[in-house]
Amino acid sequence: MQHLLTKDTFDRFIFYEGQISTASTFELDGRINREFFDSEELASLPDEFVSWHKIKTVCFEIIKGKKVPTKMKLVLGLSKTHYEELLNQCGVNYSASDVGGLYLHIHYEQGEIQIITGSTLNIFTMDKSLDKHWDEMIQAFLRKQFDIDIE
Image 1 (tube, helix red, strand yellow):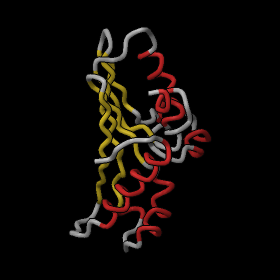
Image 2 (cartoon, helix red, strand yellow):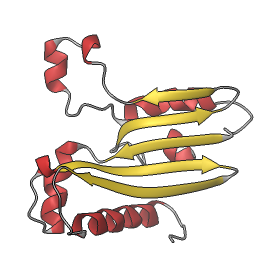
Image 3 (tube, helix red, strand yellow):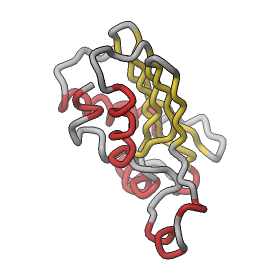
Image 4 (tube, helix red, strand yellow):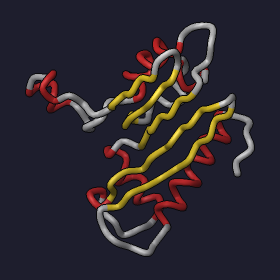
């Protein structure tokens, strides 16, 4: 939790959505509200979703206190600005526009955290190379950051 909410461990990810249950249940939408920004600010935004770095303080404020949440679900992902680099590493013949999303589902309940990867493509293919590469990349990231067992 410390790495997620107070350290910069996950700051490179973007935030898609979340749900945090404390005394109440809070639903969070990571989609950027385009009406809030002027055209110059919009042009400088690299993605249509907010970065985890910018939203984690809000999540921390919801959770802060003596009790842990009863449940928390967060969906983070890789920013579209990194798709091309990942596709090159993976060696697949997709373009960045073929990738719908690369996700990291974090689910906390009853003292246990589960992290599940996911991906979507905008094209049909039976090739699972991107899924496999994304899984391996996240496993390596988690091993580097934490001393954990990965199933």
